[in-house]
Length: 94
Image 1: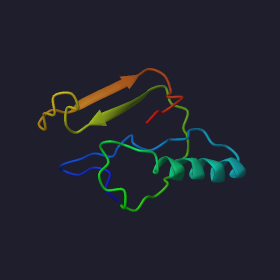
Image 2: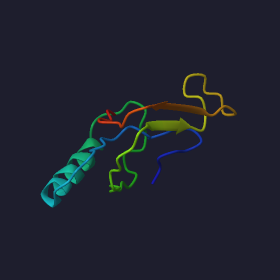
Image 3: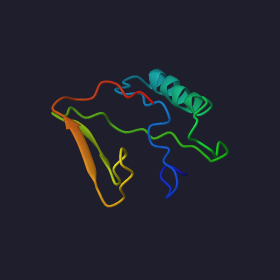
């Protein structure tokens, strides 16, 4: 699985489906995630890499966020960027 490499990052390139509650919906959500791998992505060079679908329990949180090990705006590798909000995330768009 090649999500984060020294020369590229695949994070956010695939669809995320949140708060799936029924087993039938889980299968549909997994198919939606897998289908998102075939959409054209200009920065994804290796389309032959294997893919996995990760299933996690949705938690009731007071805050949500993301951390970058390098500044995505300046490409500075010695700077960590953390962005968050005081609410739960309701949608993730690739």
